[in-house]
Every structure is written in C-alpha cells, then in structure tokens.
Amino acid sequence: MLFYYSSQNRVSYQLSVISYQLSVISQGESISKAIDNWPIL
Image (cartoon, rainbow, N blue to C red; front, side, top):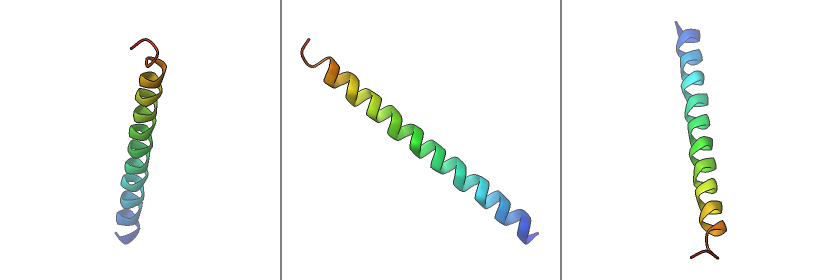
C-alpha cells in the first residue's frame, strides 16, 4: 500500500512538472512572438 501511494505521488509530481514546463514554454513562445511583431507595431 505504501509503495502504491508513493508511485502515485511520483506520477502526479512528474505530471505537475511537465505541465509547469509546458506553461513556461508557451509563455516563452508568446513573448518571442510579441518581440517578433514589435517592429510591425
């Protein structure tokens, strides 16, 4: 039971890390797009 809980905890931790990295990547892409569009504005 303890091993099952720790494995579930580890999976949820990895998922949270992946979602955090994806949000950072999407923010970086939006910032780079804004910088690329700056001369047009």
